[in-house]
Length: 462
Ligand SMILES: Cc1cc2nc3c(=O)[nH]c(=O)nc-3n(C[C@H](O)[C@H](O)[C@H](O)COP(=O)(O)OP(=O)(O)OC[C@H]3O[C@@H](n4cnc5c(N)ncnc54)[C@H](O)[C@@H]3O)c2cc1C
View 1 (cartoon, helix red, strand yellow):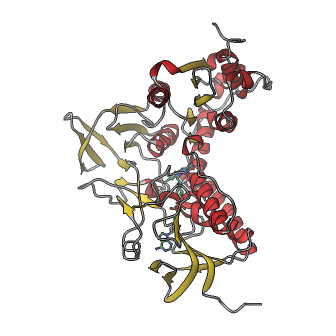
View 2 (cartoon, helix red, strand yellow; view 1 turned 45 degrees about the vertical axis):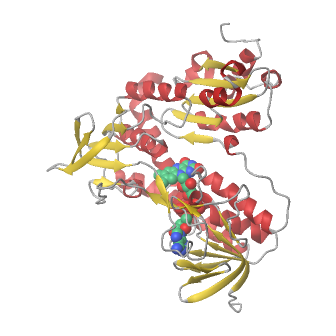
View 3 (cartoon, protein in one colour; view 1 turned 120 degrees about the vertical axis):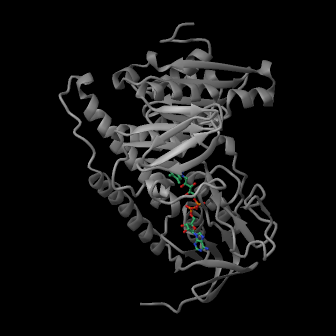
């Protein structure tokens, strides 16, 4: 039975991505009436153009590597190539299954889903599809889109963003990737496994520059071994299209040619022309400014996800959305410790971290008040079975808890769940050393690293 459509809600959310839908689900669970305005597809970037499709590509890449490297394990296998239509069908199948599930979830929580482009029209209203909807509370969650540089025109064919890269119907013979951050190195990893010649151009001195320097160096070593080229400290100066693709120039007068240029220099907030400034919401470089509880300067308006200047990660959006829903419902909420958010780059090898880098720890506590320990995965049985190289680096406040865990290696992403408990529970190395890890697992390497830091190394020298 269709109910009389209401236009008044306790919580009215603009944008149905990770931040917006998590807020909607939690608010509805807490008994509030909720509407979600979405101009495209429920699930947003993460589900349709981000986390999920890229990880499906990375898994296909892993399968390709295994087929190619079977002999190393005594398995006769040959890699005959990539059927991109098949890869895309697999990727799209994963996305569509999750999309259906999410639509069902939103429906089951009795959230009103409003299809259309919304615009903030006052501190308590949003206009969408010719209707004015009102909410006692408004949550802005319009997310982000790929950034470009002045003069760098994205044509969607030769000069592309991750959105286009995910829809390619072929494997490019060669690719230049502008930006050595998470998205850039993930695509570099996929395309190399699929058979492309890849060059990353990064203006900063390292790949994954937000990670601990030791992590960047390990990833660079692994990429070098895989034949992924990179130019570091190389500032992009221009791109021209050639008969076969693109020619990219960098500040040091270097020119690189390839079939496509993927621009992966970061993502900017979607906030222009949406009525935010007119309603008086304070902004900063296009991001919506919020306090530690995701509240803007307008008392009825909150903001979450990539739209605010916090880590651009789906699980951060989820956490902020939940926090806002709980605050609106009158529950006790505490600010998110952003250092305690796990971060994973799903390249081969993977990079995972939680807490702070050695450099930040030294700034925060003083150079003499920080200890580090690096446990090489060469000493870890399971990692040897997988034939992966890498390490776990622990950063500790001297005499105190572990404040940073930095991991490189195949499947490292799975280890970050334990690492985040260690960081967020402010565990001492001696406390973690007390916990028994299953043998042989990669998780065991985390245990061994803490044993070593607690002064009782088992499978490690020293
Ligand atoms: C290639 C790639 C890979 C990624 N991989 C990962 C990963 O592995 N792990 C991870 O944690 N994060 C990953 N991310 C980041 C993650 O996708 C984002 O952090 C997350 O999607 C942010 O959620 P959000 O809700 O803030 O914004 P979005 O997901 O961008 O959602 C915003 C929504 O608002 C809608 N919208 C915008 N304007 C309007 C309007 N005026 N009216 C109505 N609707 C509107 C949009 O259509 C969109 O659906 C990746 C991102 C990319 C691009």
